[in-house]
Structures are given as C-alpha cells and as structure tokens.
Image (cartoon, rainbow, N blue to C red; front, side, top):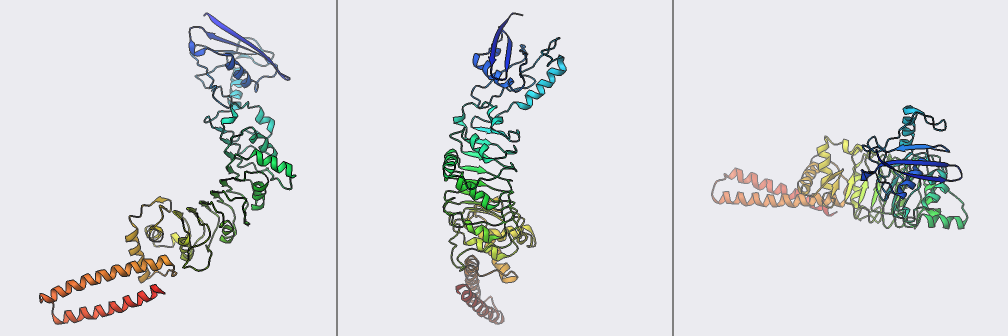
Length: 459
C-alpha cells in the first residue's frame, strides 16, 4: 500500500518522543495537519516518558481531533483509533497485543472529554494540585463559562484560585465534595484583593458537601468570591446557625441550603433582608415552625420581599399557622410543602392539595411541585370554607377571612335565589301555610347566622 509518512520530534525537560503516523493517500479523512500532530503529542505525554511509540492508522479506522475543543480530546473509541503492536519490544515497554491493550486502557482513562465548548467537566478526575490541572493543556480558555472541579480532593482554595485565574470569563464554578478544602481566613488585604479579582466574573458557586459552617461560607464570600454572586448552592454542609450577611450577598438571587441541620426558621429569617433573593431551597432541613415579621398577622411580611420560590420539601412542619404565615410573603409564586407532617395529617393527599390550592391558588403558579393555573381556586376555596365551618380550625389570617367572606357572599346569593323561587311558588299557591312558616323560620335563622359570621370576618 502506498503511504505517506509524517514524522515529528519534540523534546522537553523530561521527554523525547518520536511519533510516526502512516496515512493512506487515497483516504482524505485521515489527513493530518501539523496542528493535529501537536495535539496528538500533547495527548501521549501522559503515556510516554522516553519511550518510542508507533501509531498506525488503517483505512477502516477514522481518527479526528476537534480543534475547537478546549481540552485535548482525541476521541478514542474502538472505531476511531487503534494502537497496534509489532513483533519487537520497544525500549522494553511495549510487547505484543497485550501490552498495547494496556496502553489503550490507560489512554482511555487519562484523556478528559469535554461536554461542550463552554463547559469543562473535571468531576472526580483526581486533580489535587494545580500542576495536575496544568497537564490537561486547556485550549481557548477565554470561552469557558462553566468549570466543574467537584470530587477531586483539592486541599486548598489557593489551588482553586490559581485554576480559576486561567478562565477570565468563567461564570459558574463547582467545588462540591472536596472535603479537605479549608476556607481562608485572616488573609492580608493584598491577597484578598487578588482573590476578589480572580473570582470577579464568577456569579454561581456550588460548594456542597464541604462540611462548612455559616461562618466558613461568609469568610469565602467576603475574602474571595465575587461581590456580585447571584447563585449559591450550599447543601449538605454543617450550617446550624446563621448570621445577617449584610451587603455581602446583596446581589444573591438564589440560595440552596438543603440538608443542613439548621436550628430553626429564626436562623433562616436572618436572610430575610436580602434585597434580590427570589429562590430559597430548604429541603430536608428539619424545620418545624415558621414565623415572619412583623408579628401582626394582618400585615404582609417585610421579610423576603422579592421571594418567588420557597422549597420546604421534607421538613417537619405540622401546624397550619406556619403554612398561613407563608401567605404573608408578598411575591410568592412557587411553594412546596410536600412530605411535611401537615400534608400527611389530612385525610388524604387530595384534601391536602385542595387546601393548598385554596390558600395559595390566587397568586401561585406552582404548588407542591405541580404547575397551577388557578382554574380550581374557587371550588377549592368553597371546599375549604365548608371544612372550616364543619370541623377544621384555622387561625384568623386574612386569607382565611377572605375565603369565609367569599363563601358567605355566595351563600347569601343562593339564599336570595331560593327566596325568590319560594315567593314565586307562593304567588302560584303551590305552598301550604305550614311550608311557608317553615321557610320563614329558616330564613330568620340563616339571617342570624350570616350576621354573626360577618361580624367575625370583620373583626
């Protein structure tokens, strides 16, 4: 077979490597540019130290390198690249198909594949030190917007900071489950300013499972992370108590505190003055009661004034007063109280859903994880009003009075309709005198009931 041969010799402080690539002239797919050779050389640096390695490209195997990739990714699959052994030893390193298979397996493990042009996923790649990251030969770092460095066992924020500095336009950073990562404290002002500059473009940080208390989080916020942080995920940490973050998180839009052993809503309430907060996730935090300020239940709360989404999935809320407190939030559109005792205390899930629809249906677009368009609100309110009068006790919150008032007005309209019908029958002499007396007696009783209820609603 007629072949063309390209050879490349590259030498650095540790390595002298010769690559010989054989490509059939009649197969355009296997044409290799000088840039491709350089990229390929960088890939095999992981494999060879002063070892001669031969790569043979046969016509039935197609090899390609995406030059727009930011992490070198030779796309190794059974149908794209095969390293073939020969009959001789190569510097005592490779011998026959068995050794070649081993090298292929190592190469498969070490090559990092990226998921998109704007995202680099290095989760669990054991890149503990900055030098480990440097060996990846990241290309076009200016276009990278998202970096996942989770589960690498990184031991210092200094390492994270040096890596982040490589991506001047980075928006999202994930350092989840680097359990030995200590937070920085008492840094010199020059170092703080340098870290702030490094993280200036980062608006989303996922720092889950680091074992941090709230104080550790706030140290990172004040001494390192961007002042314009918008999204912060802190689930599975060790946050028991919290403090008012002041203006350090004034641009924060969402925060996830799920699976933290928070000591109560009084700690969560310390975030109540964040001016931009729209989403608060508190799944599985053991929260039992909720109380908003001011204490006057007739007034809308002056806390969490822009909060649209509140996720309290799987907590320990067991009283309707806590649920009704949430109706005082001014902008709430998405509320989730699934798997709280108050939901399971109802006779069935349907009844719980109806009650939630009655309390939140006039303004919520999502209730207990399900989209809601308000079409069921009127009938849900009527159902709840009947339950209130029959057996259910609810605190006298504005929403409860509104539901009662609406029900009474509807009952009065129905009473007037029935009265008109009776009068018509009287005129047509279809009623006996006894039936008329019973009707008038019932009307008097209903008038008294409505008057009493209207007095209660107005109180």
